[in-house]
Image (tube, rainbow, N blue to C red; front, side, top):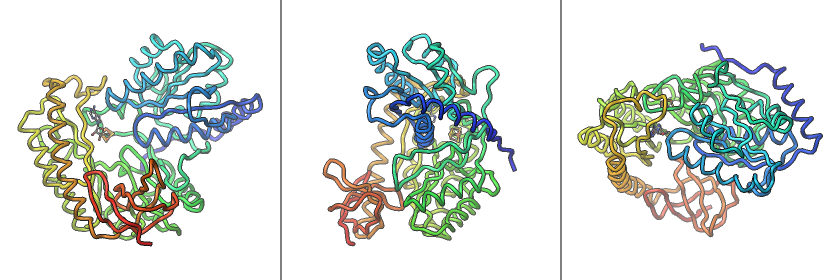
Length: 461
Ligand code: 5AD
Ligand code: SF4
């Protein structure tokens, strides 16, 4: 069992006392803009909860806010550039209202070069705080108000370290019926392309009892769809392992689906598949990022499985859980990827038959091993491979989705947007339908049409 390190309860109480002080002095309005993955969305929900303690109420745009927080992602350069441009848009607002507080947090600020850039080129950003420092927000707010001097509080600075878990701060969730539930943080895998181990630190797991309590509260409050989150959920090591945690949550009474993200293919075990088979509350979806179909590239990526081992796992899931959707991620143009390597990826994607594939152009990350490798591929070539794979996958996905026509699926409604009624089924596919169903309610939908990215149908009850 691994040792998990928690922020002492006294420290959380100290932050809560500062929050109460801020609230008593008037609070304000907060707007949070979130980039990146579900973990970041979950972090923003926690930040909103902490802001609530400090007397800040959420608003829908920066112009109405007294406090703006930009929660950033560092997985690819594109994500970083979007976050920087989001910060740039605040320049005029801050010039008009010098009292506006602007904070940048999340994965990007755990990189020294980005902190330096933010301090040098974004003078209207007041403070930076890292992925592991969310619980300090009350103290940081107080400091920013008092000192008027810019500062950064991150784990990757000298003297800082990653690896704590903070419990006991409130979470303000965006949806009443779909919830993110983080179970572990960080990653020990060091895939050579990936920045995550550097910006989120090593693996650590929340206590099983804490997770169970939160799941129970969610279900009792009417949540119908819970996603357990972790950079590598299969490494969960609390009082039980990940399949054990799944079983405990699946045993809770109530009408809900339980999902999880993301599994590393080398760790997704037979026991996990068994735990899912035991309960129809386990949503029929596996997100199993493959990254490449070439053994040579998989080794250079440090993924620790081969293409055939991956395909065996897919075959095993299909045999044991035939109604499960399998989705994946692929990186195009990893350093040294030849045309032949890329063709092996296309072949694997064809053989695996993914319900959905997230295709990415390789983006070198500062500090990662792959950024220093020989054989960096020109951008246009990476994009060409990306486009070829995307077009190939679209045809595959449309054919897979066509096999759903005629079936009746249970769908959790997300209500109406722009005149379209939609929701998601157990396989996590988007399903559009013909009439209003209250958001957060289940409906039986007979599937009458299929596209690459969605199914469409008519409500039967
Ligand atoms: N460049 C491109 N894609 C990346 N991913 C992770 N790091 C990089 C990178 N440096 C992709 C992987 C991962 C997903 C979340 O993002 O496919 O599974
Ligand atoms: Fe990155 Fe690999 Fe960790 Fe996923 S498992 S976050 S790809 S290092």
